[in-house]
Length: 184
Image (cartoon, rainbow, N blue to C red; front, side):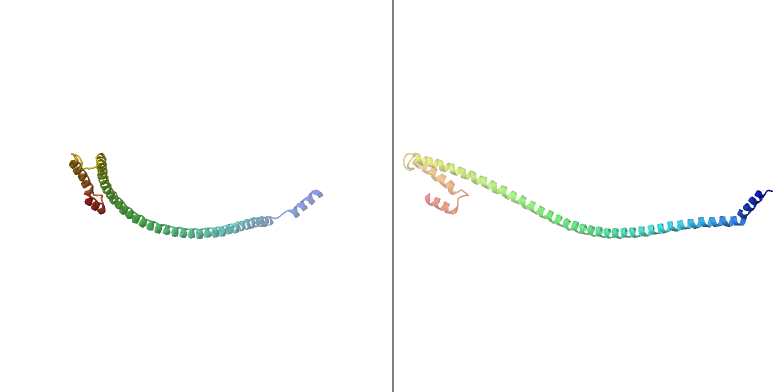
């Protein structure tokens, strides 16, 4: 062999790795990969644990807030229920009052209708009396005296009859009736 080939063989032999060394190198490489994977997994686990802790705090606060809101809503519901009961009682009381007032209204309407009928009858009688008095005044103006003339007695009895109708009128007060009786 040539010198150069021997040097190359020696250099190759010195640089050549034995199979055991190669296994050790491979194991060291695997160990480094596993250690890198473990470190990455530990970092991911720490991030996940922090995330879970943060979520636990947030959810705990949300649950506490929701619990307070539920308590507030329950109190509001109880207040509204009490208010509904009170207003229902007031409605029934007002319904009874309205029914009583409707009864009073019907009674007052009936009374007013009767009073109106009495008023119309009295008004008719007054109109008739005014008419009779107007005719009596006309008769008095035509003749100066009832007693004078041939028809005097007849006219006098008509005037007395008209005054008697006035005396019998319902609307005439007691004092006026006395005066009219003394006149007759």
